[in-house]
Image 1 (tube, rainbow over the protein chains, first blue to last red):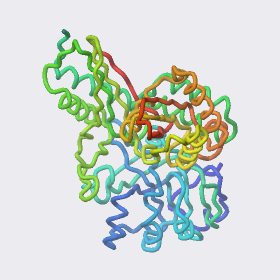
Image 2 (image 1 turned 45 degrees about the vertical axis):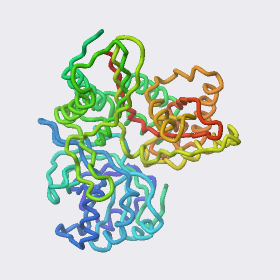
Image 3 (image 1 turned 90 degrees about the horizontal axis):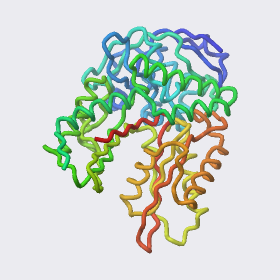
Image 4 (image 1 turned 180 degrees about the vertical axis):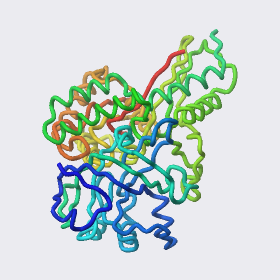
Length: 168
Length: 279
């Protein structure tokens, strides 16, 4: 079991092997299909995501009194067509999602990005890890907007480590 | 004749949406609890998190999953029931109300191919009507997430196909579903009918309670066999390995054309959210 805090660095993650359970804290950014499509296909990158962590997730609306709606991972494979370009353009260091990636994405991540699995269908549990949530880009996309989240102790597991070793 | 006001249907559907999104059916919750005993290591740990998620969702009112689904309804209308108003409009008004008041995610886009603009109220619902004798109106609602729906498949077999061919097809669909469809699964299977009917049967099968096997012995045996085979795959919770990969397999069958043998596999994730009310 490892506690990790964002922003991550290659130094922090170089010894963490695929299959390791992680508790992640700090700032992360949610984005999914529509945000990827807009950024990659329009070559539009208004956020500095260098060494940042992104989470494939679109939350349910936040109930009054809560800090976030339900917020588990969505299927990573839907982002596969944009991910290699996205990594190159932004310099992200960590992706959190659910399920297999394409061979091209696995290659693109090697040496640059660590891929973490969040557990699917546990949106309520993850909502409790969110301490702060705000939309920072593409507000018009509703649940597909980019959210900046402050999280504490998100339970995750390393699917592909920085060396490219994978448990999937 | 029983008269039911459309407004009443709206209010009931609204409450059903909110309850289904936050509370797992008792039989599913029990099956997950039982599955924990069979799992070890990481699989056991994940199963415990699934139970914790269910508890948080119910007691603190967070939806079980952020994908609160498409609203799919099976509505059985008795021949002695008169609905005052338009039932389809009443149901959609209930979906709109429930998704708003329950802080549920609106996931429906109006145009599927070009604009994909969100309707912002999760309508239209997908509604299947049927007609029965009697004075009851039975409404069943499923909130069906896309992760597992996207892994569902249909194949038109030739009648010469063997039972083994059908089993192989179902098993390969389940293996292909893998981690992104959020196992352990509940598998709904529709056999017979025709192209569209088999899918509808597969969806309807997901409403059945765990341990209620098919009434036909041959199909009940097939359900048990398939469940065993699926669990042998060791897909496990989240596709990370384990002794339980599915909580149940439900088959619904219907007569079909002599030249056809349709088989549809509708996969549900472990948060199989459905609810039934009878008026």
